Image (cartoon, rainbow, N blue to C red; front, side, top):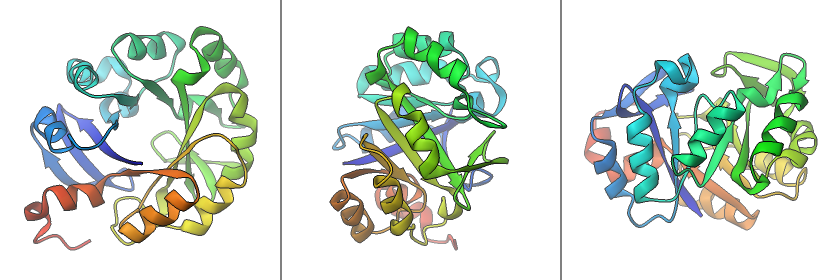
Length: 234
């Protein structure tokens, strides 16, 4: 399954390269959602909440409206049990927990146990983002001494699905690392969604053959809004 990504910043849809350089900005998230009508599910990330905390975000009403119109998995700033519960109450089909699933030493078991006690397991996704095959947290600005595949095995009891981003290729439209995703597929039996640099139909097919979903950012915007990329040089 292909899952389009709607990343929100300042109430607009944006696409960033490796979480930093803004390459695309669209002013109307609901209009973007309409462009993705053919897809069964959307991934919504509140980047303002992810970078500054939920209190610094002005996107909450947009996220609720997106969830009301389409099945959405929602992430960004899910740093407490209460925030995860609120996301579900606001209509998220699943909540995506990222940095809060980890400490600077490894897995944040205490938080994850509390989260699993408060929400059904099928509502919880954990994002395992990787830079140089090390788990990256805090907006991809800190890497841990923990390999991505090793993290999956430890995290399995707390979630129903993983979102795994290959940061090295994120947003570059230069392709992704299928072999890396294959190594993750061998590490867990839970559903996996691949993200980060997925560019071609062939890569999507290869991931599908591995039994993995593909979350698309820049590549799907290039397909749906080709005029916006005519002058871009990635």
